[in-house]
Image (cartoon, rainbow over all chains, first blue to last red; front, side, top):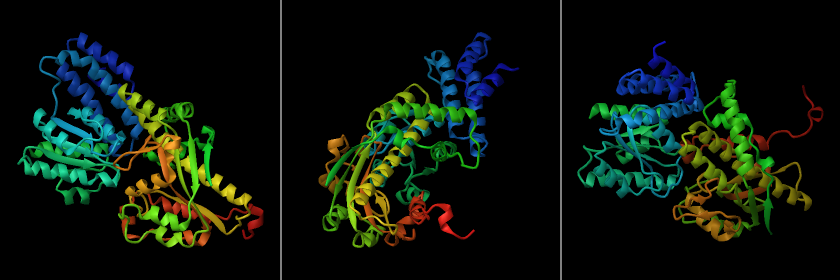
Length: 212
Length: 247
């Protein structure tokens, strides 16, 4: 069997040890690392994402696959040291100020990485200023914000307003999500996108990059 | 009366179906073996690291009105507004399973064991909620010993952040209850630390006072409508089958 297909299939199964071994084997077989990343790992995660979307598999399966994806990426990383890991775009991610919940935000980060995006995770309790400062410093196109508490949702509006104030609304796009957050709320504060769950967030981020 | 309860972790052990539901696995689907073993592993960690402890403290309706008004940010009409004056007894409550489980969750995410970390988070949330049930039962038992309980009476709990009670209500609740005693602290954003903690009021009274509809304006934003299940449980006929009659 084609080794890239084998990597992809074992990634689907969530067998992180096998994915790690197969990735090493693919390198030994002189397969270009970009190809291993694109067709073995990201390709595998794309299938996983699709199966999740159509309810063929569930969240724990996706997360086991994500672990396998990371195991493969860890093997590839040293080969990308000079020019950095190729990525589909840079996303700044964080839980908004006042909120310390991070599971949802972490899941979005995992899925974004799985889809080949570079994720800069600022953690929890992130101030609006910190989001914008990091987006500018890292030249990131997207800021992703998460909130679990209704009391902290207004902080998301502040990020959108600050971007406008600094004239950055065309250079930096915003996506928001979290249990109390809705599409209507996203529209009402002027956010560019809304992610219902982690896979939906990946779709929305892809769309934002495609529109850029 | 203010009472502290050291709760046995076995008493708050969550069931697999309730946890898997929060992982998006419908109850009519049989979960794959690897998901079942993930649940089992999470549960073992939960049982090892949880340190559940809770408190309840009597509060009069008059005093509770001040707590409930909080920072003045509640919705205009709420179920508790209707229920309060008809209640027989109220207690404020708080419960935590401690910080060690949250630390374990963070550790699992750091080592890329996302599935186990996420499952443990769900198990811990369900377990914390079960702790609330245990406090309700303890309160009910205390009232029962005082001879206040009959078939028409029941209890239901409410928490800031739900059913129109604004999150900022935590501030006054903490001032009155002082759950710092059991290791729960409040952030400036009204968030409880450890994260796996719950607080609120337990209301005791006639069943009928709890029979409200989930058609308040804010109910449309609620994603769970759990109140319906909780109310339905109150109206379950608890008599043994043979005594119920009918078919």
